[in-house]
Length: 199
Image 1 (cartoon, rainbow, N blue to C red):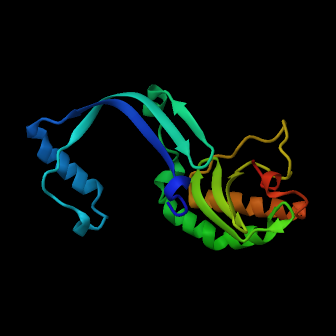
Image 2 (cartoon, rainbow, N blue to C red; image 1 turned 90 degrees about the vertical axis):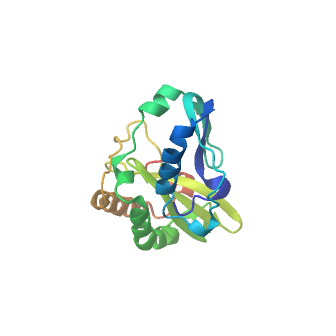
């Protein structure tokens, strides 16, 4: 996804028991590999001497969600998880639309302390909100915008409404229009850490 590169990228390391596939499954594994990577530049591939392996048992999973977010995930929780509907509906297109329609207005309205933002980019989306990468001078950070039912306050509240779960582009657009309206109402009285609704 745009913005998720290098050390800023969310990723997991999966630990487990790995075994070489038997010779009669090597051709099938190669076909699966080629199919899964069919959009990549094929001239980079060397097709000889590939040997395929399979992880038969997952023992542990280590999640790194970019800068400063790490945790161990139990294998049964990881295997039982399913993606949010919104990420199955062309998330790159949704991020492109958000960057075109909302990044400029949010960049102009949000402050980092008392300084305006130099750059703002939507980098990921899920059912409960979006992550944005912001830059002020040489400093980068990743911030979270949650989709709340009525995001009308700058500061978190114990009585804050439950998060709205978005599943399609129309719902994302409606939620982001509400975020922009809330930021506009706040008159830039808060810094970025507590100005963004739903944080």
